[in-house]
Length: 89
Image 1 (tube, helix red, strand yellow):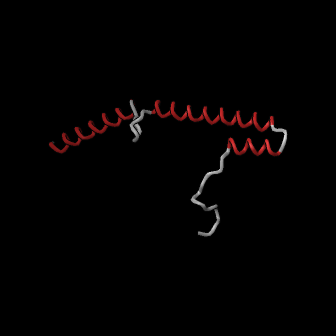
Image 2 (spheres, rainbow, N blue to C red):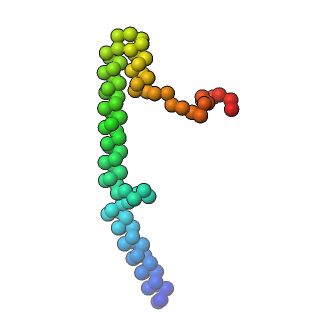
Image 3 (spheres, rainbow, N blue to C red):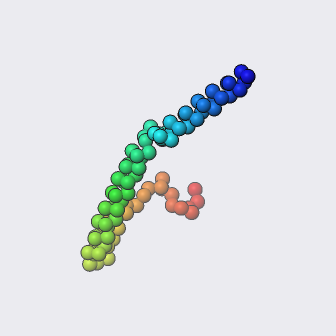
């Protein structure tokens, strides 16, 4: 009888904990789902705006030099500790 009561209490506590996590989910970083979504959507909007600026720059380019300037401005070369993919170490 004690075992059944303890098991029932344990199941009840687990169910309440799971339900609370579903109602207000919090990521390991401490942000709620809505906060995380807002942050990600903001970054997506910023990338879209930058892509639009790059598109306008490329469309306006009248020479190879202007085109290269657009590429250099909007797609800077990333540093990889002095190594390129496929290069021997």
